[in-house]
Structures are given as structure tokens and as C-alpha cells.
Length: 371
Image 1 (cartoon, helix red, strand yellow):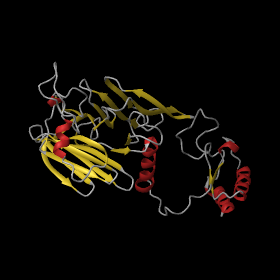
Image 2 (cartoon, rainbow, N blue to C red; image 1 turned 120 degrees about the vertical axis):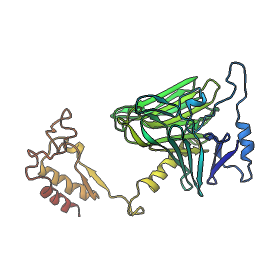
Image 3 (cartoon, one colour; image 1 turned 90 degrees about the vertical axis):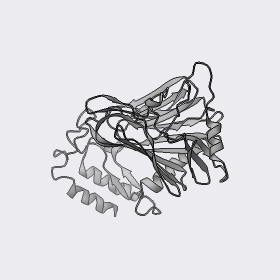
Image 4 (cartoon, rainbow, N blue to C red; image 1 turned 180 degrees about the vertical axis):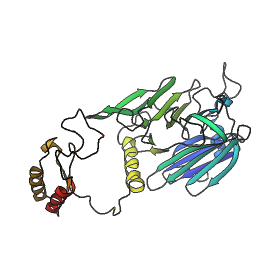
């Protein structure tokens, strides 16, 4: 190994190392290491042994595994040139920009005119690692697949936990055993949904809700996405997340994944949940006055369903205020021809039959009841 980088927050350490000028791989991610830890020794210990029937060299499970290196699993990038010819880049080191808890690595293939960048941001107060990848080209290319920077999965794990579900059956936990080959989940609906939640948790053996090691991933993208969890023939495991394959319909010069949020927990599954929740609350959905309690609100759905009558709604608002409500939520049934759940979903035009004068005048009255 000739290059290595590490990110620390006192709780965890992430170490990347590269062979000569090739793309780096994550060689360690877990409990905080001493500042004196020799990354070269870590890299040497990370090397795979050889046995019969193998290649003469073990291609690295890099941040973007390359077909050009004879990588035996799913590559991190698949693209074609403007004429449709498959491109197999061989990226080489260009530069590294290091901050206190940030890292940006740039690699290029001058012959193909492609540049790959991997970005890492470690947020110490939540313990989350935010990472994303970009590919730029000197000439237009067709992108089929680009993974966010690829993480290895631990060997001391027998299962992976993902989430699925549907309406009134949301967030069903699925336990999938690790086996040789690829576990693939892909959402091609073009939107987020319960069917294919863009997340994955990998607990180590013996991990419970409150104890043990777990590794959590969430792909921060509301469109179609793809997740690959693969065990290679040599036993190594990789996790890839990115936008759905072939979702880029035209050739382009610049492509970027969404952010992949990754967390290491030494306190079981709950540790992952706490880190994700705190990061969302403190760094993504930021309230103007975070310390101010959220208003108590009343939702009228179960009281009226699709039967809207302003006099009844005003009476409900008065009763809700008496109970301490500070916000009145008008739920379903005010738009389109929404008299049942078989029509009009997505038609956000006010129903003139129910509100001939629009919502404004009526809701001023209801609003006055709550202030």
C-alpha cells in the first residue's frame, strides 16, 4: 500500500488504503483506533491469501470496483460511450483533499477522458458518515450504473436486515442470510415508498437492540434506487447503493450519486437508529427554532373522512381547541372528485362542490378559532 487516509471522531475510525495509485478500499471501519495505529500494518493484514484456482492477484474491493481489474463481483461503474461501446476505466490517483473530518479523492483515466471522485464527511456529534461519488467525462457518455463509494460488509455477520411493506403494513423487517452471490433490491417506481426502503442494517453475530456491533446504511434519495449486497467467491462482502440502473436517459458529462449515510454502532441496532434520528433532526431537517416545542395539532380525517361540511369542521375546531390543539390539519377529501379512495389522488385542485368559495375564507374562520 502506498496511500492511506483515516477519519476519526473519538467513537469510530474509518481507514482507506490504496495499492500504489489504484482506487482505495476501506480496510477498517469500527471502534476508534489509537492515533499511533500504523495504517500500513492494517493494510498488510487486510490482504487476501492465495489458494488454488484463484487469479494471480486479488483485485481490490475498492470504492468503485473495476471490471478492468478483473474484479469478480459487481462493478461500481457501468457506462458506454456515445456510440454504445462499453467502457472499462482504469482509474489512477490524481489528488486528495483532506480536512478535519472530510476527505475528497480524485482519480482519472486520461485515455477514456473519465474522472472519478469520492467524497467523505464525518459528522462527530452524530457519528454519521456522508459519502457520495461523481463521474465526469470529456465527451458525453451513457451511464448505466454508478454506486456511491462502496463499503465492505463484516464477515462476523450471518444476516442483513432490510425493510419493506405497503400501506398500513409499513416497515416490515426482513432478515436475509448472507450466502454466496448477490442479494439485489431495486426500486424502479421513480419515487420513494415502503416497497423498497433504501436502507440496510448489518448486525454482527450476537447483536441485539442494545448491545453488539451493527453497521447501518441509508441512501438519501427519493427516486428509484438500487442496493447490492454481495458475497464474493473469496468470501469478501460488499455493499453498493446508487440510483436505479439505466435511469439516466441521455448521454451527459457529469453524474453524481445521492448521499449514502453510513453509521457504525457499538450499542446494537438502537445505536444505528439514534444516530440516524439525531443526524436527520440536527443536520438535515433543521427547524428555525429547534428548542421550541412543536405545535399540538388535530387531524380531522377519522372524524369526517370524505364528507366535508364547513359547519361541522368549525365545530370540530372549537372542540379541538378546548382540548389544547394549536394546529388544525385538513387531511383527505378536499381535492378533485375525491369522494372515496378510488379517484383523484394527485389532483390537488380544490373541489368546488365542497368549497365553492375556495379554502381561504373558511379556513380563516377555523384559524381564528385556534388563536
